[in-house]
Image (cartoon, rainbow over all chains, first blue to last red; front, top):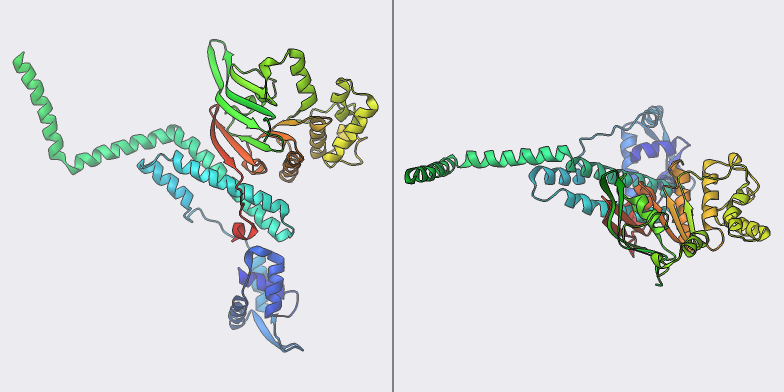
Amino acid sequence: MIRGALLTLLSEGPKYGYQLKSEFEASTGAAWALNIGQVYNTLGRMERDGAVEPLGEDDEGRPRYQLSSAGRAELDQWLGGAVERSVASRDEVTMKVLMAAATGVVDPAGPIAVQRAASQRTLQDATAARVAAAHVADRLHLDRLIVTTAAELRWLDIAEQVLEGEAGEALRTERQQRQTSGRRSKSPATRSSAARSVKSEQGEVADNG
Amino acid sequence: MGEPAAELRQVVKEHRDGSTVVRALGGIDFAVHAGEMVAVTGRSGSGKSTLLNVAGGLDEATSGEVFVEGRPLTSLTAAERAEHRRRHLGFVFQAANLVPALTAEENVALPLEFDGVRASKAQASARQALERVGLVGLQRRFPDELSGGQRQRVAIARAVVGTRRLILADEPTGALDDLTGRSMFELLAGLANEGAAVVVVTHDDELAAYAGRIIRLKDGRVNQVVERSAAPSGLGELLS
């Protein structure tokens, strides 16, 4: 990702390491401070791959780099391509809610309420910070945080509604069945002897009658 | 902190639908003070709008008490209640509900003129209110010459014109795009900073975050209250 950003900056013309660092930070705001080591590491890898070429030193002795034609092609691919998002990435909030719902160790309403309050507070903080943010990059970072947090709140509402409804009822029934069959398979002997004792009690009552 | 601008104590509101009774509010405690913006959120049917209407005296509680600036609403005569609504209360709805044949300024001045304020004075107050909502130079435009966001600003100006201290807004941004909706909530938060008591009903968590306190209703009861943290996370913490 940093590689794509550096290729973009180099497409404007030859640049030296520190210049890339400061231009990167000016474009992306306070959120993604870049240390100069990362810049040189990435430049080194890009040079190895033939994406950039060293252009000697400028008047002040700073080594400069320029984009190669291979680097240009890589940049076009990076900027022109879509970023794939996947549901497979494990989200911790989803994990907690699903675990609570599946096991009944706690009522899923608990983790949902706790997360809702925390997310709502994040949203309040981000909203206040956004109103005060001067730099357009910071505003857009905060906007992203705001909409993803708002999406999480929406998901919590949906999860709450789903788990309160028929789907939640089905989960509870499934859990009870699992627990019952779990007990049965663990100790069939105890269970059947218990059943026998009930029978024999009935038998005794019958005998007495 | 002085008396709340509006307060509900153990308010129950039931609607009768034939033989069935629907409980919209099931014993709500709620207060809003001057200088504060409170957002009321919750699913459809959770009682948000009912709470707002009861707080504004548009709807009567089945039981419990409603206070305006420390006085029980039931202790006021009908005339006093009407005067309270006219003078101190501003409502903003989802649709701006402006009179199409009147200019922005005339729309804003209307409630004052109904209240018997002299036309020239009402117009001056209307211009001031339009300035407060950031509409300068548009006072002579008619509603159909304004954008949706501008019309809603006129509606907010009408809600705050004169001596109105309590602003009640019901989904005021329903018909607006994201950024215009945000600017509307920024405006409402600004009015609270200037000393108004603002209660806004919204189903949108993102917009509710402009309020210092967020009350979530569920089945007519308060389900959760979130207060803005005293030491909010800064840019660095939020984006790290």
